Each structure stands twice: as structure tokens, then as C-alpha cells.
Image: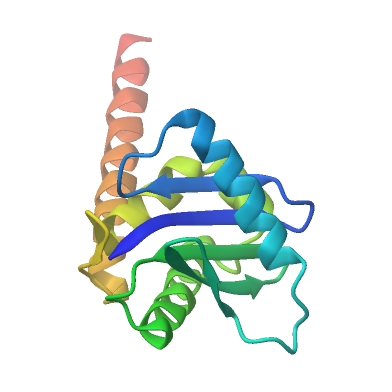
Length: 157
């Protein structure tokens, strides 16, 4: 089971965090600091799987971002490693070559994508089309809303 999902930049600042079991807010900051420090201090030649307290960390560097997933011992490291890769590919497809700024200004959409992929700490969806379907629906509704709004303003004038 996935315990937490972190997206961190190279400076060690958390861009996104999602916890799938309760952790006190005070413990979260300490946990994030220690996890980030342990992942950023490792070299590129080292294995991206490491132990931390009572769970395992799987991380992957994607451009200027690190994605770190904490799991219990029931998860397979390679499956989570590929899940991270799939998550990045979905972001790339949605944002057309994702950047750190895309994630910062569209954090709600990144959360929607992650929520479509993971439910209560279990990976439930990996198909890109099904993951992006809710965002497509939101986009279409937004377009329809702006068309109706424009028509209403035009008729009012």
C-alpha cells in the first residue's frame, strides 16, 4: 500500500504531498524533511529504492523534480517505479511537456490526475485516456460555459 506521495524540487521544497494514512501535521514536516534529504543526498548511480523507518522509499528524478513514494512491504518496488513513470507520462500528455511551473499553477489538475490513479493508497488506474477523462470533461464544460456566457453578454448588448 502507498503511504504517501511527494513531489519535490531540487532545492528540497515540497511541491505536492498526498498522504494515504493519517500523519500528524508536525510529524509530516519532519517526515518530509528527512525523506527529501535522504533521496536528494543519493547519487544517480545508486538504486532508487531505499529503506526509511518502517517503510520503503521509491523515487525517480524527472527533470528538476523528484517524485518520492513511500510504501509498506506489500508493494513491489518496480511496480511503484513504473507507476511514477506512468504518472509523469500522464502529466506530460496533459501539459504538453510538463514543467515545474505547470504543476505549480495547475496543482488542482495534478491532484485530479493523482486521485484518478491512486485510491486509498492502492493504484486503481494506469490507462492514460481514462485518467485524463475527468479533466477533458472539465475542459469541455468550461468551454461551454464561456460560450454561453459570451452569447448572453452579446444578446444583452
